[in-house]
Image (cartoon, one colour):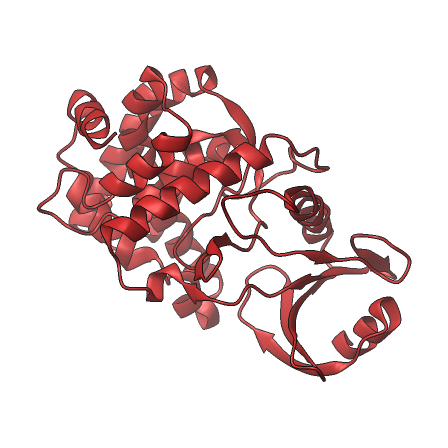
Length: 316
């Protein structure tokens, strides 16, 4: 089917390899001239809305500086995506590079990653995309209800840390989150979705992108690099500094950032244990970031609101 869609809508042929994916079908296309592309297809209505968002966002990013993003290839009729008989999809270029989680971590790399993320946010602020307000599982608006999933957590210290982080979010962060800047965001800049390339830091997989607090992208990216218990923010300091060198954080954003980081770690743990219960055959792929989140949450656990704000201000 992928081969037929590729030929019919793009006039292209090539070898096809299926890649791991949770919602849509993702295939790597290798053309006869050696170029590699990514074809995403789905029959699910929510995926088609996501495709409309992703293609418009990536198209709007073309020409922006300071980061790398995939390019959407238009169909033979000039459209950003195709839809036919309940199947929809799109074709994009493949970013050549190394996923951040495979790269050797360094202070300089973290700083460059943070500044590239900020420049991505500046570019996304200018794009006009459809379906930005569609339902997204990972949207921050879901977080206050995620403790309904705690039954799927293994008992122990991590479950306790999750409860504390989510309670802090509901009590202190959520009442103030409407007062920071909101815009179209990537909403999942994880080490699997950020690439180290010869042209700079790249971002892939805009499938969870939506309208959310701008600082949410920083909180997500920073939460994934918390790994060193000897540092107040676990090693996220330089990523935060890189981001704020391009987009200075407001006083409120600095105050809320650690609470957002901890809540994101807790949300990732809750959602992925639940989804692993629903789809046990895919549990290894679904839980690829869980161990990192559990370790990071244990490092940030001692930081209350004032200590977290002080650590962020010191990092900046």
